[in-house]
Image (tube, rainbow, N blue to C red; front, side, top):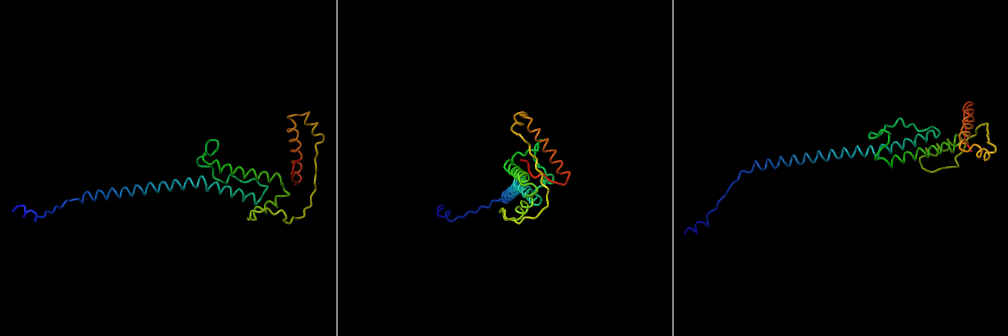
Length: 194
């Protein structure tokens, strides 16, 4: 008997787990919210770093090149650009070494173009830089100008160098200052020093 009757008996149990399910859902919701906050904060920080370390320096370099294309003889106005947010007391930027080096290279190339070509080549350089195709067209048509040319020569330069030694540069700078001042005073431009 009893064995045969017990095999037919079925037992059902019901457990109240709604509190555990609610707390698991709440923990899951908090986990998703915390993950979203962390991801949002990381994206915001990445955007700030990208703006400060990549986009702003590249925009600055493009503006420097545009300024040089507009007027190759004018020094680029760097005061319009914001100083770096993380700049030190010397104005040096820590993590922007490559972009800072590129900016300085562009400024130095611009300075060399200004010195090398002078007023005579400024229009040609400006037209070539603003053409946008990146090619240097040396066969651009020129323009006729009326000019008075002056030439100053320091005679016996090697003898002068032997006598003055390290003061020779001071002497040459004084002569250059006089010549350049006179040229500017009479609405002229010193094209180059040889």
